[in-house]
Amino acid sequence: MQTKPKYTVVVIPNDDKMEVSYFCSDNKIKDEEKKDFTNLIIQLDDCHCSYRISKKTCSDTKELEHIVQKTVINAKGHLC
Image (cartoon, rainbow, N blue to C red; front, side, top):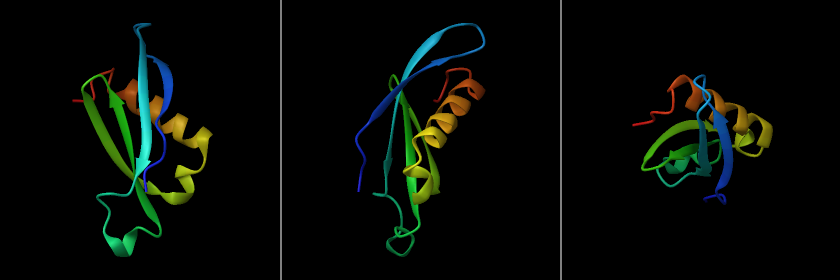
């Protein structure tokens, strides 16, 4: 299962704005874990990162947005 990509703009501390896409996918999750977990894939330009999250979190748009914002800000825009 893969959700449709969503987009957000992240403003990092030096006031740069970055358009980030993100989606949930369980393609690389073991079959026995697919019931409870999925991967959150965050893409910025050619770089991406993934986090294992609960399926419940994947359906919470505000929580996903918060994770994406926090991840990109902490990485200072460099996900690679």
